[in-house]
Image (tube, rainbow, N blue to C red; front, top):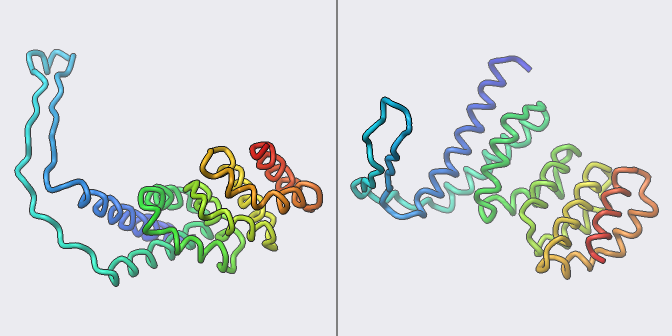
Length: 204
């Protein structure tokens, strides 16, 4: 990949992440608190911790549904490009953005996990959804245990194990126990069998 293209991709990911940060900031009210702490160094001697309230900022206009949809589409396009280019920095930036706003990105990540033609992108999207630890995703992970890619199947088994590790997700993950047992015994990929074994141990 040319350096110029990589810079554009990283910049795009930064813009997407910044958009999510702005979204979260809008939900924290209209004021910012600034805390100035005393420092132990000699140049700061004598300063006391002070609370300074910033003036109220004007409320940002709420995003429209079309604006949100366009931003999510751009984010998923950047996600796909970064994964295919093995651009770890951009993937990590988008990972943080997705985790910061699960309700915003979940549906698009589900579409990617189920229907993206590249197996690596499907696998990354499956793992990202697994990080949400949302019991409502158990049926999706169970279905993805039958994906043609071992990378996707491994991450689906891992995601079910993440659900099984918490009380509210264990019952949902148990519906996939039969598929996990099949994967543990029959899957041709050792990593899938291992992930299924760990998930089943968490279900016990």
